[in-house]
Length: 86
Image (cartoon, rainbow, N blue to C red; front, side):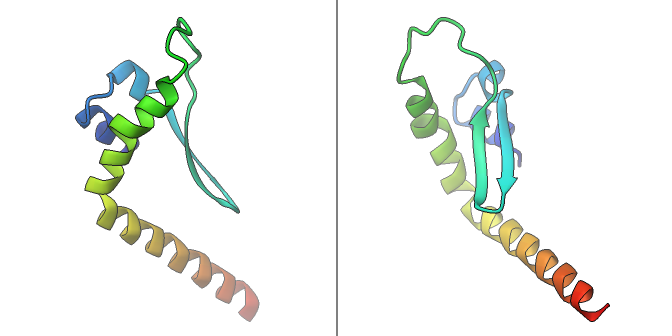
C-alpha cells in the first residue's frame, strides 16, 4: 500500500493525498506535502492531515511498515558487508 492509497482510504482527498512525497535520508524517512497552499484558510491543515489520514493509515499498516523497514536495513547491511569484503 502506498502513502496515497492509505491516506485516501482514511478520507483524505485524492488531490491532497497525491501531493504526499516520501523522502529518505540518513536521519529517517519523511512524508511531506509537496503541493502548494490553495487558499491558506486552514492554518491547521497539516496537523489535520496528520491526525485524520496519515496516522490512522500508519496504525493500520504498522506490521507492513516494520517488515519493509527491516528489509531495507538488511539490504543496507548486506551491501556494506559485501563492500568490506572487496
